[in-house]
Length: 616
Ligand code: AGP
Image 1: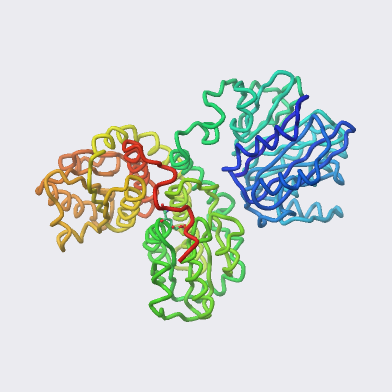
Image 2: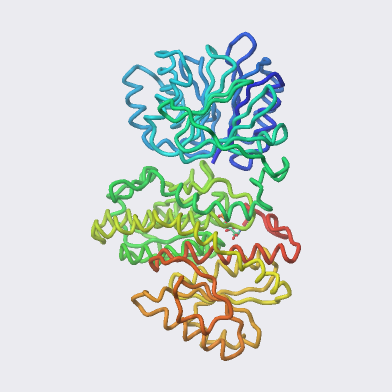
C-alpha cells in the first residue's frame, strides 16, 4: 500500500500535502515525494528514500516555490527498492508531468517495451514510471490531462490509484482508480484527493467515494467524475465520522483491528499478478531458477514466531504437492544445531519485517554453507530480502500492530504459490490439479471476508473470559500450527498463559491440564476431510468435555457433529483442508484482540514486545 494526496486550492499546498502524508505514513514509509505547479506554471518536485522526515528535511533545505496545485506520495515499495530514484512522483512529457501511484501495474513490462521502442529511457525500476511516461505521451498528443489519463488507464492491468498533474494544465489534479482506494475531500474553494480520508479530514469531513474504473478531475472549485470512457458518473457522498487521529486507522479502534480487516486484501494482493492461465508466475526468484528448483531434495524454512507458524502450515501443503521434505526451524535454533546442508537444500527465510536478527543470522549461516536462500518478506528492500538469492514479496501492506495478523495469511499465500510453482516445475502434480488449487486459493479473500463478517459473538465471549488465567488451543494437521498461532496471539495481546497442542498429543500428557471450566479452543477439520481427521478431533473434544473443559470450536458451517460437544461454535466457510488455516486463524486473532481490549491493554503495542526483533 502507499499513501497518496492531491490538492488544488488557495492555501499552502506544500504544507497541506506534507501534513496529509504524515496522516498516511502508516500506509508506507519506504520513500516520499511531492510535486507542485508554481504560480508561474512550472512543475517543481522533490523526493527522498526513507521516512517522510527525509523529504521534509530536504524541503527545508531547498524549499519549493508556492503553488495552488500539487500531489504527494509516501511509498510502500513493490517494484524496485526504496531509493530516491524509485520514489514517487515519476515524470513524463520531459519533466512537465508528475504522476504518483498506489498498487501494482501487472502489464508494465510490455508497456515499457513499447515506450523504449518509441525512444524513451527510464531512470527507475518501477512500474509507476512506465505509467508516467505513457501519460506524458498521451498528453503531448491530446493536450488534455483527463482525456490523456482515460486513454492510459484503459491500457493498464492490475491494481492502481493514480494521481497526476501537468504544468501546461495548472489548477487541475486528475486521478483514476481500479482495485485500489481513492476518495475526494470536498472543501470550500479547495478540493482534495487521497488514498484515504485521514489525509484531509483535518480540512473537511465532506467526502465523495470514487467507484471502480473511474477517473476524477478536481480544480479548486469543481469536481468531475467519469468512467474510463468519459461518461459522467455521480460519486457517492458521505461525511467522515472520525476525527483526524482516528482516521489514521481508517476509523478502526486500533491498527490491530484495521489489519485483521485487511486480510482479504493481503491475500488478494499477494496473489495478484502471480497467477496466469492456471500457472504460478514468480518473477522475483533471482538466481533460484527452475533448473535449480527441479534439483532440490530438501527445504528448510527458518522463521520466528508467527512467521514460523505460517511456515508450519505451508509445510503440509508443500510436502503434499511436491513430495520434497520440508523442515520448519526456529531461526535462533537453526544455526546452533550444526544442521546438515547440501547444495540441494533450499533454505527459505520467512519474515514480515525482513529485519529479524535471528532469521538474518540463520540465512548468513546457510549462505556461508553454500545453500541458496529464498526470502518471503513483506518489506521491500529489507535486509533479509536483499541478502537472499531471490524473494517472494507478500503484498500485505505495512503491518503496524506488533502482533502479526495479515502477514500470517499473506505468508501462507506466498508459500503456497512457491509450493505450486515447485509442483509445476517438478511435475509432481498434474497441471489441472495445480490450476484447481490456484482457483481455490483465489477464492480465499472472499471467504475470509465472510469470516470477518461472522465474528460478532467473539467480543461477548472475550468479556466473559476476561478473568481467564489460562487458555488451551488444539488442532490437527494444518490446524495444529493454527493452534500455536492462536496461543501466541493470546500471550502477546492479553498476557494470558496459552498453549497450543496437537490434538492427538492430549492423551500423552496435556490432558492432565484439563479441569472444570478450562477454556479450550479447538480448530475442527472439515467433516469432508478424507483422512477422517474430523472424527478424531470430535473424539478429542469429547475427552476434554468429559473432564469439564469449556470447548470453543472453530468449525465449518453445517458441521452438526461438533454441536453437541461444544459450548461455543464459531463458524467458518467450507474450504479445502490445506486452505482452512486462512479462515480458522481469524476468529483466534479477533478473540485475542477483544480479550486484550476487555482487559484494557494496549492492543497495538503490547508490553515487552517490539514489531521487529533486530537483536539476537
Ligand atoms: C507475531 O505476532 C510476533 N510479533 C512475532 O512472533 C513475529 O512474528 C516474529 O518476531 C517474526 O517477525 P518477522 O516476521 O518480522 O521476522
